[in-house]
Image 1 (cartoon, helix red, strand yellow):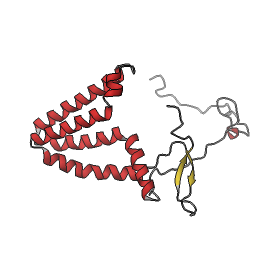
Image 2 (cartoon, helix red, strand yellow):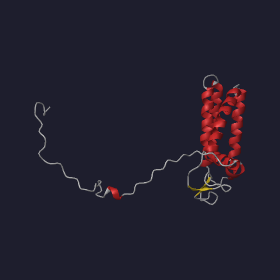
Image 3 (cartoon, helix red, strand yellow):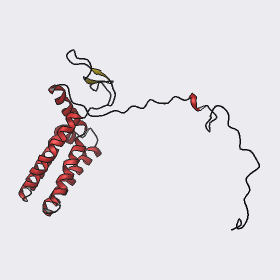
Image 4 (cartoon, helix red, strand yellow):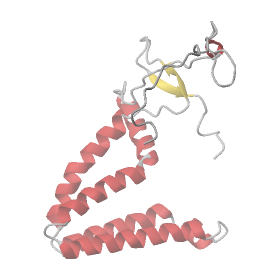
Amino acid sequence: MAGHGTIQRPSTMSPPTSPADPEDSTGKNRDDFERPEFRLVCPFSIPTSPEAASLRIIRNLGHFALYYTHFVWIVLFITLIPQRKVSLVYLVIMTYVASLYLLLLRALPPYFHLLHNIIYKSMVLGLIAVATMVELIATEAGLHLVITLAATVPIVLIHAVLWVREDFCVEERTGGGGAGGGELVPLVDESTAMV
C-alpha cells in the first residue's frame, strides 16, 4: 500500500561485476571440481547359457524372495476380494502367523537352539504356505489360487532369469572364446565376504 501511486526509478548503482572464473558460494572455482561420469545401466540381459540362467534364478530367488512373495500375495489378495471373503480372511490370518514367526525368530537370541538350529525357517514357512493353500482350496478358492500362480510364477521366473545383479560387478567373464557378452564377475567373492 505504501507504494501506491509512486513511480519506481531504476537504481543508479551499477551491478557488481563478475570475475572471469565463476565461483560458487565456497569461493572455489567450479571448473576445478570433477564431474562424475554419467552412465545408464540396464539391469536386464539375456543369459549366455542355461547354466548361467539357472545360476541367476537361484541367486535372484534368494535375493528377491520377499519381493516375489509380496507380488504373488498382492495378486492373490486382489483376486480374492470380489467373491471369496472367507478365503481372504484366512489368507490374512496365515500371513499374520508367518509374520509373527519371523518376528519371534528375530527377537530370540541365537543361542536359543530350538528355533534356530532344529526347526529351520524355510521348513516352517513352507508348512505355512502349504497350510494356506489347503485353506484356500477348502474354502473353494482353489481356482483363484491356480490362476494367480499361473499368472505370477512365469513373471517371477522371467524377472529372475533376466535380472543381472549389478552390485560390485566390474568386468565380464567371456565364455568359450567369444569376445564380450559374458557374465559379470563380482568384485567381492560372496563365499568369502563377511556378512
